[in-house]
Length: 364
Length: 267
Image: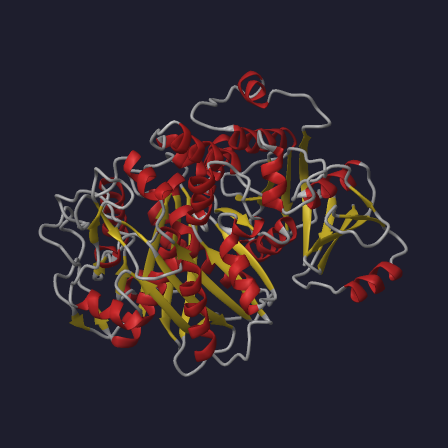
């Protein structure tokens, strides 16, 4: 049983999907320098415009429903990928009351997203994957495997994370935040930009005229170090190999790699090494996080949408903010260019050596 | 969908009085630094499983929980509010679901796929569906851990879980080694993605003549035996209970008007 992405919608600091793709192709970062979360320490953040995160979340999912061939989501499984879920909601309670008294079970971190969407759309079942920055990439892994055993015909993947004190201050405590816009793969990169994002994709077992196929998914756990990737890149290579095997495609068939490319020292060095070692044909690679920032648990889903758009448009995204590449053996395009793009690999890597790669492709 | 159980491990804080952290150091010679109680409990259950299970490097690891590591969130927020402290790096790291998976994977020496699956409705049964579909594809075996830790504030747990304030709660960790192959298996698990209405469940229950029926403490209907203390992953406990007692069971899980069932058959 094959898995097709038939409809999708997104919001990020760069706007909706159309606005996001325009920003990516025009190399316009949507990162702002901001001191909301740390008064004395402005950092680069990817902030969205909204009155209420959960209202926007429902709007994005409603867009997907309205563009789909479904009347409702009553026969659809919801899989949410999120690293902190409703952490911002919890923080509101803690910071306002300074105690636990008003914690509402329906506002609990992670499950608050499924609860909110379940109450409006009535999914047949819900679940959440929380593996930090691979959360919504792992949602694809789960969805593809569930569809392959005919457990569900319709699955909605939602990647969603809002900015909150915990993530901004937490990553700052780990000394990986950039005070300016991030510059993935540059030799002089400073670090990452925490960002927020919402991405929803409807996966179905039957294709429509505009479908993109989820051809393969691979995951690995290098368990090398809690926060650092295996310096030999074995974990990153392993998950990409598994995804390619799952998709039954040769490495020479890859037309574009949407890199994880956070802009941190450790990630970019190891990811570039993995791509250099594995892809001898040097397909073009870029990280769109230079435009969106790192949307954490939403990144896998947001970049799945970017991958779909890249295939449909046949235009390779350039590496925004690239001045001098640290690893000159990978193919980082400085400008967008047209190309027949049939197959794309999208990488997501997370703390604990949790690695996931997804292969997207045209429907054959 | 069917999975076969090759080995099990169980711990409940109301049945055994153990200092988990000390036990990890004393018995299993493990480094416990930089980890919190939730991670300690998760690693402890895994080490117990290792005593009776063959662990392979490419075994897939799946963990689930009812409330997850709520203590670290509470501790961090209170520290920020009351003491004006900054978030500590290891508190931030320990909040992430895959931090627990990392420590469990490292302690077992496994490098296969590694997923922390949270389901606010049916954590164990939904994870079993995920594990089945994953193994169906990979043909490997899986280690499945279900962890619930009672925090310092039991009230917080009850509020987060949405259960009555007088319901007794308990810390628990249960693991199974799972396979699609029945050779050398202890028991067979049978389940599906389907949710049942009360009427549908009644038909299933009435048809049952062979199995002892147990139910989740969330389930107020039906006069079947439930656990005496609440933890969200008690379906995992009942798998191990059925195997330990060589009792074939039908377990009923319940969440917001929907029922799911799990059959455990000893082999």
